[in-house]
Image 1 (cartoon, helix red, strand yellow):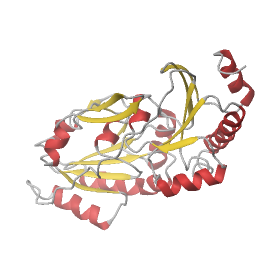
Image 2 (cartoon, one colour; image 1 turned 120 degrees about the vertical axis):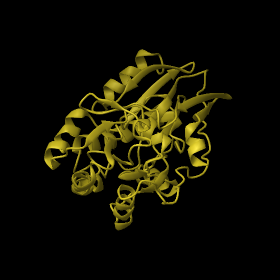
Image 3 (tube, rainbow, N blue to C red; image 1 turned 90 degrees about the horizontal axis):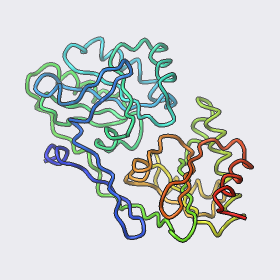
Length: 311
């Protein structure tokens, strides 16, 4: 059943003033997976030939780093019988940081970047590290976040037999409601994309990113208080975030502007947001500017003035 679902086009959508904007995610088996050494592979390439082990990760994700020796060991032991692919999720990351991790851990398997989040979306990835096992026929037989004995047992089962007898695992976790952004055509709208964790989780591994996240939320709070006539909307990534985390984040920063979780990830994909934080300005529903650097509050306020958003 799940293979038929994944073989069809998956649509995730957000509602903007009564209109539906579709974020299309294609069949995961045909999505081009671009490795950092310039190759392009697809999961279909391995159907009927060998099972596949996908690991979604990020360079700033501490558990991901801790699990890298396990992934390399798995490749050394079983790499000729199972395709091992480490898929960087492409959020607050770059090739330089990825290459550094490859050298640090001596990784010799395929490493790719999910530039458009299509593969992550297709497998409903909501947190890293995220492990996916596909048997020889392309059926998902494992998903999880731990480098666990269960994962190792399933890998051994996959590489030791021609046909998998492992149970199929669904990759969907229920239907999330669309995010209603309500971009007002009669005034400037501002979408502030961020996360509930980039301020504290990245403090040690990516201090500059952490500082930028903290500064951004304070600046948005100040500008909202100063210019409440503008249409401000905070959009939180669904990664590691639920209602509890959102409420804690609201209280932590005393946030008064509208704030919601992008549970379908459609807004982040539709607007091509790959860095936290990002502020996008809209006029009549059309993007007019995008900012990622929040080190200078005056420059951001000047940007608003330049589009006649404020006097």
